Structures are given as C-alpha cells and as structure tokens.
Image (cartoon, rainbow, N blue to C red; front, side, top):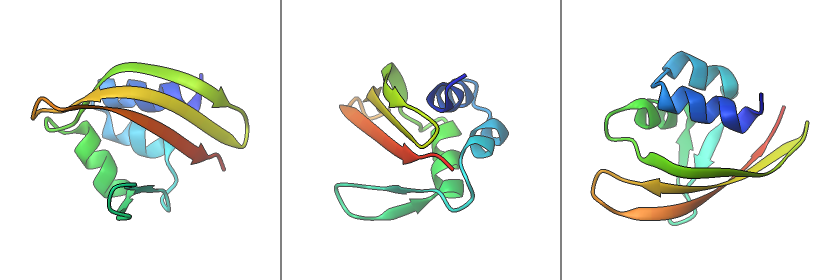
Length: 91
C-alpha cells in the first residue's frame, strides 16, 4: 500500500496512531501561505479531529522509495474548499 493511501485511510478512520506511524517524529507541515511550520503531533491531532478537512478527491501523482507527490481537493467545516499539493520525502 502506498504511503499516501495509508495517510488517507488513517484520516478517514480517525486513527491517530496509524497516522503517526506513517509520519516521522521530525515531520512538519510547511504552510505555504504563512511559512509556519506545524509539527507532526499538532498536525495529526487536527487532521483526526472533528474540525478536520474532508478529502473530496485524492490522486497520487508520483511515489517511489524517496518521494511522494499527491493532489487533493479538500473541503473545510467553514464551507471553504481548496486544492492541496502534498510533497514529502520518504525516509
């Protein structure tokens, strides 16, 4: 199973343990809009919470043993939507 699919399944199942098993402890999300670094534990708790965005569509663009790239359409509790590009180095 792809790394991206494991993240999607963990989020869909609201499984915090499974989500954190995929991401390394030093993982962080870099918000392009602010430059803020959101650490793994803070990000994963938000993505598993009831305030989390819903993934409407997810497409794996590329994944190998070193990198993954996916594109998602997300909808948020405040009725906003956005496209999200995920790029991660795989350890």
